[in-house]
Length: 294
Image 1: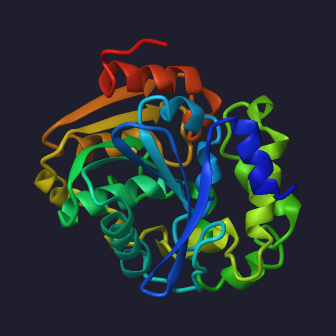
Image 2: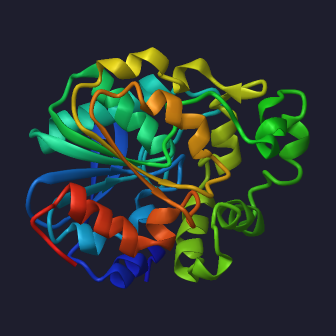
């Protein structure tokens, strides 16, 4: 059985896997559930399977669209030097207008949060609210461990070591984002390797390299004062122990949002929606689906 189908079986929800072409570019996505539409946008080029711990729960209350963003999974491949706005944000915007065609809420993690904010700022689609998890968009800082990735002269050397397209390299990168390594599921690692082993799919560190200038994120990834133009509610969920995007880097600019609600989890890291799904789901029930209880 295909590893993606195995993951669907593990999730145990009525998931339908579909493909569509937008401007000649393939978008692969999973859809399930009934109710208002919730679009789920994963971090970097992880793939829709990042939501494997959440889709069954979400599908009780929403029609869930979880997509492989361009450059991830079975969607259109991206090359080094890609433009994140033109090649990702614009394509997802067209996907929404072509496939969904109604008002939506957007759930975005990390880079997917930046895409969510970009869509809200462009105001080309009808958005009910944003739900952001440990999101990019509020700072241009990067952790010290990622500095070598930002230096063009060092990048060829990194490709011979930590960026080699090998399963151990992919696993090490993903596991480094976990707060507790006991929460790592082998089926998720298998799904990720299946994605990243595809010809032409960038290593996650190659993808990150494309988002960096020397010592910092590219300016397009820090919205700054533009955040004041977002008029819709923005619900924010953050792991206090996130060492990829620490909350204290983001908190000042989060304050520029007109309507924000923040939930900070003291013992969680960057992948709180995977490692602490109970509190994450309760957050959704408290602020997004207030009439329901677990």
